[in-house]
Image 1 (cartoon, helix red, strand yellow):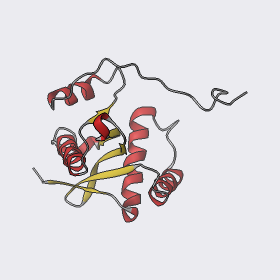
Image 2 (cartoon, rainbow, N blue to C red):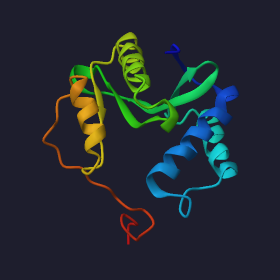
Image 3 (cartoon, one colour):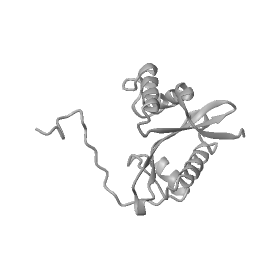
Length: 160
């Protein structure tokens, strides 16, 4: 099995990141809803240039991008130590079952520890039992939390 290498992406990697972000969209919402490549790469480049908090880790096998973690460092956190929040963890369908996700999660843990962060938080869809089982196999603790979302395409939080 080829070795998986993971590294923090930079602006030169925007096309690889965008390709995998689009693959995430295609996986979850299908081609009818997923954005084309052009607006996807524009969003990735903007997030990298503006240093808005989004970071990307890329997993490569034999020079090809096969996995992606989209994450952010959030502070203050417990005792001001902060946390790493994983927004997306995705492995290309051709690389699934080859420990790419495990390597990405270990890389994220090493990154967090090296930045003084004391935990990793993430969510999954309630129906994504495969992801839930994966995280639990790695030792994640299922939390009794309630997840909320404000849909800003409606009139919520407008101040009216």
